[in-house]
Image (cartoon, one colour):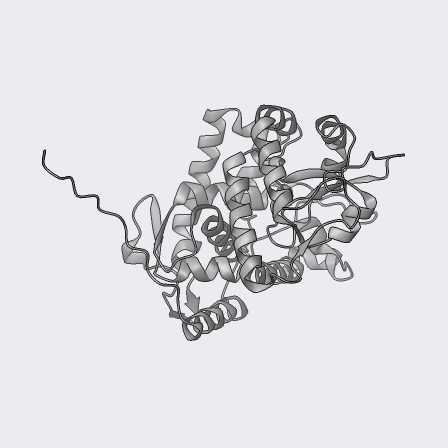
Length: 356
């Protein structure tokens, strides 16, 4: 019998410290010197960063991303922002995110769908409507930010991807880019969100109301607290009214919905990432990762109750994708294990659950 050669893709080494610093400098220049008439550039950079986490690995390899997946990230980013903004006594209005006379096309497309669908999950449940919106966003991305993202001081600096390598439906991140996006995710999120907020605040159509508003970023980017409160009964049922971390019974509504992978690491609300914690554990855990024992418990819970979590939490508008949540967890635990193994993990002092 002839031998069959198995060809495996070679994993490129991770970039040197010098290359990583150069990459981060390019990111800072791209955001600081961005010549933008809308918020699309920031949305595109955030989108490819989050996809690098969800679809990539810790190597210096290239990564091909579908434009349709990037469009999905755009929908997630802009969904809440396309809703009317309520400011003091003024009439609610949709924030302008384009410097021209018209609203940003992505906002307009999403706002139109929101007249029929209250949540992203309900929109996703109608493939025809979802694909139609996704295709419209794909066109916007290809016509605008995909071409202009890497313009720094009017020069095209192709350090993320090459336009000549882009196909009709995909772009390919250059070697080392995937690794750097995954490594500098927190910095990129912070820089992009600040620039995004400034862009919206300085838009002349918004500035007459927003000059004195200190927490515009809350509306644009923070988790919807009302949505989190709405799923508390589901988590109480799922966890039999016990804290996920200490295992003790929760009394007198002294509990909170906790992001198992902290919001500070990955700023997307996904159904499988939510656990119920008592107020003490929720406060003490804060922005830390729970120790490995809790990750195993979390994986087991999601495996056993995947159907319940997916079906029930989707009704409240949350993205329910177990595999996506697990890949994000793999990334988060890998990053913290390398960068802060001594102080980056937490477990309750008094727990009925033993660590491994």
